[in-house]
Amino acid sequence: MFLDDQEQKKLRAETERRRTFAIISHPDAGKTTLTEKLLLHGGAIHLAGTVKARGQARHVTSDWMELERQRGISITSSVLQFDWDGFRLNLLDTPGHQDFSEDTYRTLAAADAAVMLIDSAKGVEAQTKKLFAVCRRRGIPIFTFVNKLDRPGRDPIDLLHEVEEVLGIRTVAMTWPFGQGQDFAGVATLFDKPGPDARRRPLEQIIATLPPIPPGGVSDPDKLKAKLAEDVELLEHAGDPFDHGRILRGELSPAFFGSAWNEKGVDEFLAAFVGLAPAPGPRHTTTGEAVDPLAPAFSGFVFKIQANMDPAHRDRLAFLRVCSGRFERGMTVRNVRDEKDMRLSMPHQLFGKERQVIEEAYPGDVIGLFDTGALRIGDTLSEEPTVEFAELPRFSPEIFARLRSKDALKRKQLEKGLLQLSQEGAIQVFALRDGGLRDPILGAVGALQLEVLQYRLSHEYGAEIALDRLPYTVARWIQGTGFDPSSFEQEVDALCVVDRDQNPLALFKSEWNLSYAQGRHPQWTFSPTAMTKSR
Ligand code: G4P
Image (cartoon, rainbow, N blue to C red; front, side, top):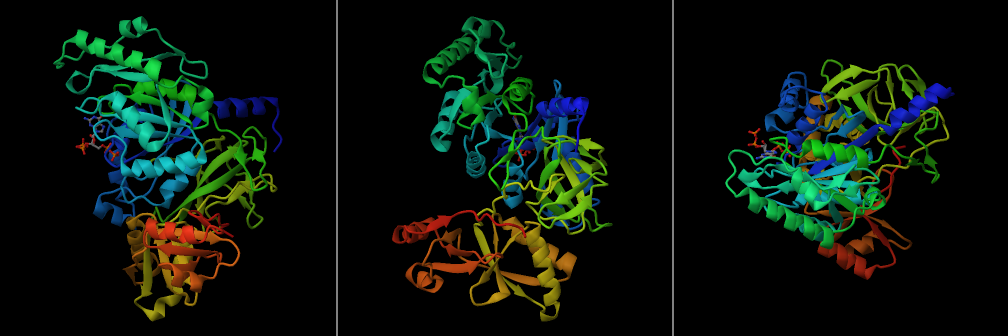
C-alpha cells in the first residue's frame, strides 16, 4: 500500500491521462460506427468493421448468448481501451438495442463522462432521453455529437435548440458543419486549444481553414461559407459562452458535428474531448467522504456481473471500476461487504469480447475478475477496509410479470437461479405481501431482460417457467410513516409488493395513477430508485 515517490508520480500521470466514458444514443444513431472509428483513430484496431466482426466471432463460443445470436442483437456490454494523443480512453460500451437493461444504467455509474450521439435527421429520440436523465442525475459532463451530417438532415441550429428544449441542458458548439448532405465537407473548429482555457477563434481564421468542398458537392461554395459565417455569428451572440466549470458540472454540453461513416469531425471531436472531459476524480463513499484516486491504497467497485460467457467454464465475470491506487496482478484485497480477503490472480482486460490477462491498472480502468459467486453488484474491493463506495442505485423497473414454475419438483433450482440472477442484477425480484416468494413478481427495465431470464433459468438451472405479463408500468419505493399497503391498494389502483430487503414498493398502471396517489399522500416519498445493499 506504500508507494515510493516514483510510483506515486506514475500513479498521478496515469490517472491524469485517463478518460472513462460511455456513448448514449437511440438505436441506429451510429454508435457502433462511431465506436469503430474512435478505435480506428486510436490505433486500437486497424480494420473498420472489427467491432461487428468480433461480435459475430464470439457467437461461436457463447452459450446463453445463443439468444443474442438468434435475435441478432447485442445484449451485453463490453469495455474498449484505446490511446489517443497520449491519453488513454476507456469506452464503456452499452447495449445498442432498444431493449436495454439495468446493465446499461449501471455502466453509466462507472463512467466519468457521456457522449450523447444524435442522428442529424432525427434529433433527440426516446432512448437518448432516458439515458440522458441517468447521466444528468449523476451530474457527469455530457458531450453532444450530432452524427450523419453526410446525409440530408435538420438545420444544426435547430438541432441544438431541440437538445436545449427537450433535455433542458444548454449547449456550446465546439465545431460546426461546413455544408450538409452531399455538400458536407467536414467541420470548422470554433475554438483554439480545446481545454479549460479554450478560446473562440476569430471568424476570418475559421473561414480561412475550412476543409475543401467534396467533389460531389452541389452548392456554390461561397453560399456555404456565407451560411457558416451567419451561423457562427448567431452562435456568438445567442449561444452560451464557453465555461469549463459548467461543462464539468454537466450544466453545459459541448456540441460537435460529424459523420462517423466518412470519419469527418471525429478527430476534431477527440482532440476536444480529451481536453475537456475530466480525469478520474474522487469517488463518494458511504460515509460521505470521497476517495482520492491518487490515494496509495487500491480500491474499486463492481458495477456489472456477467454470467457464463465461456460455456466451458460456466464462470461469471465481474466488471470492476478502479477508483484509487494502483492495481497489480496477484494483489490481495478485501471485499468490504463480507470482510473476506481475496487474491486477484487472474484479472482481465476486456477488449470488446476478448480477454487478456493484465498486470496492472489505474483509476478509471475497468478490469474483469473471474467470480465463482463471491462478488455482487455494488461490492467494494479495497486494500483499505474502511473504504466503502456509495451504493449503486437499483433502477425503477417498467415491465412486470408474474413468474409461474412449470415443474414443482424443480423449485429448489428455480429459487437458486432466481437468487443468483437477481444478485447479478439481471432482474429484480419482488414478493407479494402475503404470498412470499412462491409466485414472485419480476421487474425489468427492458422486455429483453425477461426473455433472457427465462432462457437462462431453463438452460443453466433446468427450471422451466411461464411469465404472465402484468399491466403495471411504474414502480415507486414508498417511504414514510403510516404506510398501510392494504388500505393504499384499495384507495388507489396499485399493487403493493416488497423487494428482497423487505422495502415496500407500489406498482402503478400509469404515471397518471402515480400522480393521483402522490397527490393524496404528499406526506410520503415516492422514490423511483431503491438504494439497496446487496448484502
Ligand atoms: P447503432 O450502433 O447506434 O445502432 O448504429 P450503427 O452504427 O449500427 O448505424 C446504424 C446505421 O447508420 C448503419 O447503416 C450505419 O452504416 C449508418 N450510419 C452510422 N453513422 C453514419 C453516418 O455518419 N452517416 C451515414 N450516412 N450513415 C451512418 P445500416 O444500413 O443499418 O448498416 P450497414 O449496412 O451500413 O452496416
